Image 1 (cartoon, one colour):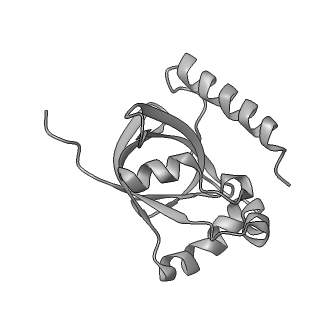
Image 2: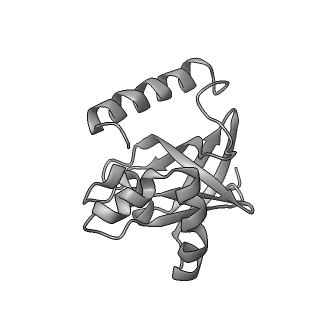
Length: 148
């Protein structure tokens, strides 16, 4: 079971600080049998400021797959609302940054990805069972950086 929301917030804040202090050497991990961790750098839909959000992920070919679960909350997470407004973003995994474009998974992709996501992070199944909203699966697909 996931820890309470205040504990999650503190944990991710410490995680973000560790990533920043070490220049990306610590704070992210590639997925194995469990989810990996990355930082999503997106643009705030109202502020226009860069937002750095820690997320769990799995890989699907060249794409990174994340879940807009908001720990099972009945509202979409801010980072997903930001990506819906401006789908171009970056993911940081270690010292590597990859420009990506976000999109929701199709129904077929969700059907294929949910078993893998649940196996990598079992709380996702509980979130889907208790939330009053559909929990989106989001694909972050590599894109070419803008020239200049």
